[in-house]
Image (cartoon, rainbow, N blue to C red; front, top):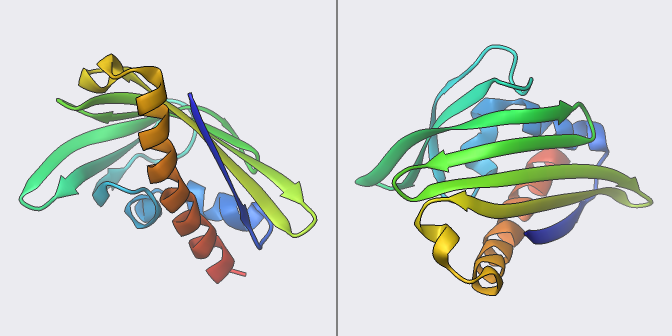
Length: 144
């Protein structure tokens, strides 16, 4: 699993507001380009975001499902983008002196990416997730 952290200069509640608004997903997740729908009750376990990934015109429609949710603290997702594959993603929020430490833990679970050696997967995911967490932090800080 690739683990990446970033500190947002705002409260965990403000970061959670962004995570809980499924329509904001493509604004902070690198690779997501649009939302086609958000299930009622998002991010309760079993609900899904219906998104597209890629760069137009090479866009894939798929979904991300919430597997577990502790509001304000933790969100576990199964992200899909077939035929590219699937990934398990766990986001954790921890209050710290200067804001909120956001941690994302991610690894490919199915598909072609799972055949890459773990160190290469982890390095690629880390680079992507640094930008993802920066975007998430900026959105949350903008709500403060």
